[in-house]
Length: 113
Length: 114
Figure (cartoon, each protein chain N blue to C red):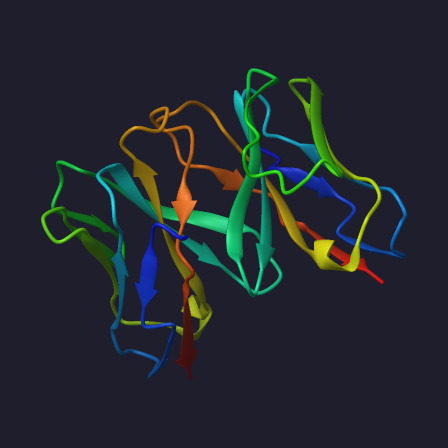
Protein backbone atom coordinates (compact mmCIF):
# COMPACT_ATOMS: atom_id res chain seq x y z
CA UNK A 1 0.00 0.00 0.00
CA UNK A 2 1.14 3.53 -0.68
CA UNK A 3 2.08 5.50 2.37
CA UNK A 4 1.31 9.12 3.13
CA UNK A 5 2.28 11.20 0.12
CA UNK A 6 3.40 14.79 0.46
CA UNK A 7 4.23 17.31 -2.22
CA UNK A 8 6.37 19.08 -2.99
CA UNK A 9 9.37 17.49 -1.25
CA UNK A 10 11.27 20.76 -1.36
CA UNK A 11 10.06 24.32 -1.74
CA UNK A 12 12.17 27.45 -1.90
CA UNK A 13 10.40 30.77 -2.21
CA UNK A 14 10.75 34.40 -1.31
CA UNK A 15 9.12 35.94 1.70
CA UNK A 16 5.68 37.31 1.07
CA UNK A 17 4.78 34.56 -1.36
CA UNK A 18 1.95 32.12 -0.80
CA UNK A 19 3.01 28.55 -0.10
CA UNK A 20 0.75 25.52 -0.41
CA UNK A 21 1.76 22.13 0.92
CA UNK A 22 -0.18 19.04 -0.05
CA UNK A 23 -0.88 15.72 1.58
CA UNK A 24 -2.59 12.52 0.53
CA UNK A 25 -3.26 10.29 3.55
CA UNK A 26 -3.38 6.53 3.51
CA UNK A 27 -6.70 5.38 2.11
CA UNK A 28 -9.22 4.64 4.84
CA UNK A 29 -7.44 6.59 7.54
CA UNK A 30 -9.83 8.82 9.46
CA UNK A 31 -7.24 11.05 11.13
CA UNK A 32 -4.85 13.48 9.50
CA UNK A 33 -2.17 15.54 11.25
CA UNK A 34 0.08 18.40 10.17
CA UNK A 35 3.38 18.88 12.04
CA UNK A 36 6.28 21.27 11.78
CA UNK A 37 9.83 20.24 12.69
CA UNK A 38 12.67 22.65 13.44
CA UNK A 39 15.93 22.32 15.31
CA UNK A 40 14.86 24.90 17.86
CA UNK A 41 11.34 23.69 18.62
CA UNK A 42 11.40 20.04 17.64
CA UNK A 43 8.24 18.42 16.28
CA UNK A 44 5.13 20.52 16.83
CA UNK A 45 1.55 19.56 16.06
CA UNK A 46 -0.12 22.31 14.04
CA UNK A 47 -3.60 20.91 13.42
CA UNK A 48 -5.41 17.61 13.11
CA UNK A 49 -8.57 16.47 11.35
CA UNK A 50 -10.99 13.64 12.06
CA UNK A 51 -13.25 12.61 9.20
CA UNK A 52 -12.22 15.78 7.31
CA UNK A 53 -13.25 18.07 10.19
CA UNK A 54 -10.61 20.17 11.96
CA UNK A 55 -10.58 19.11 15.60
CA UNK A 56 -7.70 21.01 17.15
CA UNK A 57 -5.91 23.90 15.47
CA UNK A 58 -4.37 25.33 18.63
CA UNK A 59 -0.89 24.70 17.27
CA UNK A 60 -1.35 26.85 14.18
CA UNK A 61 1.11 29.68 14.85
CA UNK A 62 -0.83 32.58 13.40
CA UNK A 63 -3.54 33.63 10.97
CA UNK A 64 -1.08 33.35 8.13
CA UNK A 65 -1.45 29.59 8.41
CA UNK A 66 -4.55 27.75 7.25
CA UNK A 67 -5.35 24.11 6.60
CA UNK A 68 -8.16 22.43 4.74
CA UNK A 69 -9.33 18.91 4.11
CA UNK A 70 -11.92 19.05 1.34
CA UNK A 71 -12.22 15.28 1.14
CA UNK A 72 -10.87 12.13 2.75
CA UNK A 73 -7.95 11.81 0.35
CA UNK A 74 -6.49 15.29 0.29
CA UNK A 75 -5.38 18.06 2.61
CA UNK A 76 -3.52 21.34 2.17
CA UNK A 77 -1.54 23.56 4.50
CA UNK A 78 -1.25 27.12 3.25
CA UNK A 79 0.98 29.94 4.43
CA UNK A 80 0.15 33.42 3.19
CA UNK A 81 2.19 35.55 3.34
CA UNK A 82 5.27 33.43 4.08
CA UNK A 83 8.12 34.65 6.30
CA UNK A 84 11.70 33.39 6.77
CA UNK A 85 10.82 32.06 10.24
CA UNK A 86 8.37 29.65 8.60
CA UNK A 87 11.34 27.73 7.20
CA UNK A 88 11.06 24.17 8.51
CA UNK A 89 10.18 20.63 7.51
CA UNK A 90 6.42 20.13 7.44
CA UNK A 91 5.10 16.63 7.94
CA UNK A 92 1.70 15.15 7.32
CA UNK A 93 0.64 11.99 9.12
CA UNK A 94 -2.48 9.86 9.12
CA UNK A 95 -3.92 7.05 11.15
CA UNK A 96 -6.77 4.63 10.99
CA UNK A 97 -8.40 5.23 14.36
CA UNK A 98 -7.53 6.61 17.81
CA UNK A 99 -5.78 3.41 18.88
CA UNK A 100 -3.42 2.95 15.94
CA UNK A 101 0.00 4.54 15.41
CA UNK A 102 0.51 7.47 13.10
CA UNK A 103 2.02 7.01 9.64
CA UNK A 104 4.17 9.89 8.45
CA UNK A 105 4.97 11.19 5.01
CA UNK A 106 8.54 12.13 4.12
CA UNK A 107 7.84 15.81 4.63
CA UNK A 108 8.20 19.04 2.71
CA UNK A 109 11.39 20.98 3.35
CA UNK A 110 10.37 24.63 3.11
CA UNK A 111 12.86 27.46 2.81
CA UNK A 112 11.65 31.04 2.82
CA UNK A 113 14.29 33.48 1.65
CA UNK B 1 7.03 22.63 26.52
CA UNK B 2 7.64 19.13 25.27
CA UNK B 3 5.92 16.41 27.25
CA UNK B 4 8.69 13.92 26.65
CA UNK B 5 12.35 14.49 27.23
CA UNK B 6 14.82 12.01 25.83
CA UNK B 7 18.13 11.20 27.36
CA UNK B 8 20.80 11.21 26.10
CA UNK B 9 20.49 13.76 23.32
CA UNK B 10 23.12 11.90 21.35
CA UNK B 11 24.58 8.40 21.61
CA UNK B 12 27.44 6.88 19.63
CA UNK B 13 28.17 3.15 19.85
CA UNK B 14 29.88 0.37 17.93
CA UNK B 15 28.01 -2.14 15.84
CA UNK B 16 26.93 -5.11 17.92
CA UNK B 17 26.60 -3.13 21.14
CA UNK B 18 23.29 -2.40 22.83
CA UNK B 19 21.78 1.08 22.80
CA UNK B 20 19.55 2.40 25.57
CA UNK B 21 17.54 5.57 25.30
CA UNK B 22 15.37 7.04 28.01
CA UNK B 23 12.26 9.19 28.00
CA UNK B 24 10.66 11.09 30.84
CA UNK B 25 7.27 12.73 30.80
CA UNK B 26 5.21 14.89 33.11
CA UNK B 27 1.55 13.99 33.04
CA UNK B 28 -0.51 10.79 33.14
CA UNK B 29 -0.64 8.92 29.88
CA UNK B 30 -2.80 6.41 28.04
CA UNK B 31 0.18 5.04 26.15
CA UNK B 32 3.70 5.87 25.09
CA UNK B 33 5.10 5.28 21.62
CA UNK B 34 8.58 5.21 20.12
CA UNK B 35 9.33 6.41 16.61
CA UNK B 36 12.47 6.39 14.47
CA UNK B 37 13.44 9.06 11.97
CA UNK B 38 16.12 8.50 9.38
CA UNK B 39 17.82 11.58 7.97
CA UNK B 40 15.57 13.36 5.48
CA UNK B 41 12.64 11.03 6.06
CA UNK B 42 9.43 10.96 8.07
CA UNK B 43 8.95 9.26 11.41
CA UNK B 44 8.33 5.55 11.49
CA UNK B 45 6.41 3.93 14.33
CA UNK B 46 8.40 1.31 16.25
CA UNK B 47 6.41 0.21 19.25
CA UNK B 48 3.52 1.23 21.52
CA UNK B 49 3.27 0.42 25.21
CA UNK B 50 0.06 1.01 27.14
CA UNK B 51 -0.07 2.52 30.60
CA UNK B 52 -0.99 -0.82 32.18
CA UNK B 53 1.99 -2.60 30.57
CA UNK B 54 5.48 -2.66 32.02
CA UNK B 55 7.52 -4.21 29.23
CA UNK B 56 7.13 -4.97 25.56
CA UNK B 57 9.33 -6.61 22.96
CA UNK B 58 9.47 -6.37 19.20
CA UNK B 59 12.38 -8.08 17.46
CA UNK B 60 15.57 -6.42 18.75
CA UNK B 61 13.58 -3.73 20.55
CA UNK B 62 12.64 -3.80 24.20
CA UNK B 63 10.58 -1.04 25.78
CA UNK B 64 9.88 -0.59 29.46
CA UNK B 65 7.45 1.76 31.12
CA UNK B 66 7.47 2.91 34.74
CA UNK B 67 4.38 5.03 35.32
CA UNK B 68 5.33 5.73 38.93
CA UNK B 69 8.53 7.41 37.73
CA UNK B 70 6.91 8.70 34.53
CA UNK B 71 9.69 7.24 32.45
CA UNK B 72 10.30 4.79 29.63
CA UNK B 73 13.34 3.24 28.06
CA UNK B 74 14.02 1.86 24.60
CA UNK B 75 16.70 -0.81 24.29
CA UNK B 76 18.04 -1.82 20.89
CA UNK B 77 20.07 -5.00 21.14
CA UNK B 78 22.89 -6.05 18.81
CA UNK B 79 22.84 -2.71 17.03
CA UNK B 80 23.56 -2.34 13.33
CA UNK B 81 24.79 0.58 11.25
CA UNK B 82 21.28 0.74 9.77
CA UNK B 83 19.93 1.62 13.23
CA UNK B 84 21.59 5.03 12.91
CA UNK B 85 18.70 7.49 13.22
CA UNK B 86 16.90 9.81 15.62
CA UNK B 87 14.56 8.16 18.09
CA UNK B 88 11.56 9.94 19.57
CA UNK B 89 9.19 9.06 22.34
CA UNK B 90 5.63 10.32 22.08
CA UNK B 91 2.94 10.36 24.71
CA UNK B 92 -0.81 10.04 24.41
CA UNK B 93 -1.86 12.00 27.46
CA UNK B 94 -4.86 11.37 29.69
CA UNK B 95 -7.30 14.22 29.25
CA UNK B 96 -6.66 14.58 25.56
CA UNK B 97 -9.25 13.06 23.30
CA UNK B 98 -7.91 9.55 23.63
CA UNK B 99 -5.51 8.50 20.95
CA UNK B 100 -6.02 11.59 18.89
CA UNK B 101 -3.02 13.65 19.78
CA UNK B 102 0.60 12.81 20.53
CA UNK B 103 3.22 14.98 22.15
CA UNK B 104 6.74 14.25 20.95
CA UNK B 105 10.00 14.56 22.82
CA UNK B 106 13.12 16.16 21.43
CA UNK B 107 14.72 12.93 20.33
CA UNK B 108 17.95 10.99 20.77
CA UNK B 109 20.38 10.91 17.85
CA UNK B 110 21.86 7.40 17.70
CA UNK B 111 24.97 6.74 15.65
CA UNK B 112 26.09 3.12 15.19
CA UNK B 113 29.63 2.91 13.89
CA UNK B 114 30.54 -0.08 11.71
